[in-house]
Amino acid sequence: MSERRYDAIIIGGGPAGATAALAMAQAGLDVVIVDRSSFPRFRIGESLVPKVVEMLKDLGVADLVDRVVHVPKRGVEIGFGSEPGEQLDIAFANSLRDDVPRAFNAERGSLDHMLLKAAIDAGVEFKQGFLVKQIKRLEDKDVMVVSSDGDQVSGDFLIDASGQATVVGRHLGIREMHPTLRSVSYFSHFQGVKRLSGDRIGDPSVIMCDEGWFWIIPIDEETTSVGVVFNETIARTIAVPADQRLQWALERCPLMVDRMTGARGPDHNEVVADFSYQCRPVAGPGYFLIGDAAAFVDPVFSTGVMLGMD
Image: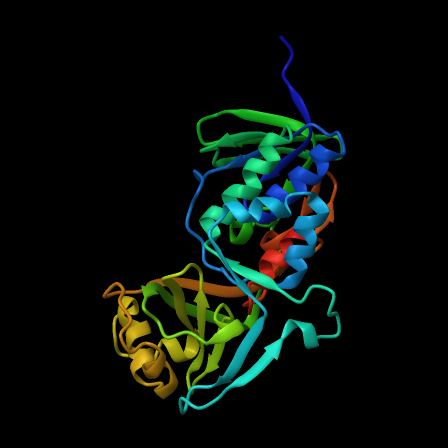
């Protein structure tokens, strides 16, 4: 029996990989996604921009968002944390493009799983727990990846949507770190965080502080994602354990102290190092790099999701 060959192999089942797979399946191509993770899995980046709503409509899956717990939003709050006073309110309807005046926040595990399932329902094959150990061949019309278990998958083209793992970028040695854009984020999910009122209740907040900036993102009726981003140089000067730095930062910011009054959550935070990089070129013989696999810059409003899906 001959080995099955695919029109395209996609590494990574996140928003970038699932969107590419769904679009190709809708065009009649035979596609497989390989991913080391099981879904749903946790990710930060819960604040989606209006362009994502537009792309979901184009893919024909916008109605599926209703099955995912989400919070509608009509804009964003931006300001300084030095005092709890009124901050700048920016409505999407007042932007240069006012045709998509609303977007939404959602827990990424559920949203990403929804997109992946839509691709699978469209005929995309999904190989879960497939950790790419080797790219054995990488030429136009002839690519092959090998898993840590020795499974082989071959096809015509390879699309790297592996996010910050940048599987193809590392394989080719084309990943270049930015010399100064090196950030670290500390975050947790909380209940009872004070939110904005009226039609702004779902709007996320970006609050600047002396050391960096905070995010506040409502992701369901009770849960709010709260985090802070520091430059790596500043992070190294903070004399508290890494899993306690969010609380350290919250206590130093008057506006955040106000917003967190009565909030309930874990006694420690998660940590992610968001070091910026790019891979050049982003396409070559047998491969394409998309989303964070191509480049990463510390995002605001989860623009990385939008860029990966576009």
